[in-house]
Image (cartoon, rainbow, N blue to C red; front, side, top):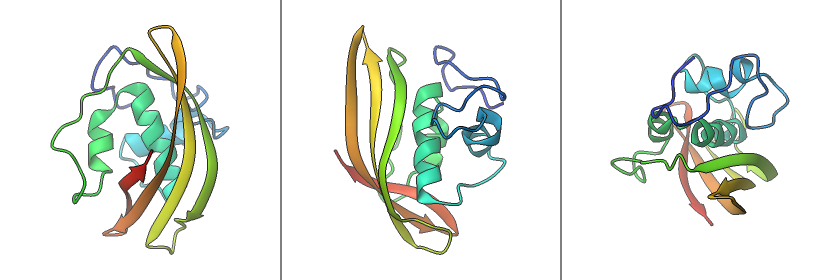
Length: 138
């Protein structure tokens, strides 16, 4: 299993429930994408794997799956933020034969004992046959 970029982040075992709450074990869901064993077949699956990358501190995966026209030069994740739950509210397009997709979601977290949530609509684009995160509206 790919280690987190920072040891302060929790990394589930392959048989543990995937943090994206798909219902699959981590090793069969986002773990195989983050490890580079497979590529996300849909924009929603990429969204789920990117959420999981935030959970486990896999900043390199986040950068790798970010569209080059909007990707930052570096990304520093805050280990004091604990991502708790992902709710996918809608997904438009983003299928295996689409070129663009949209995923609206709410991610719940805890930071310094306070609970919060982040709601956004993310846009995804296929680049060289792979889904990439383009940008979002928070």
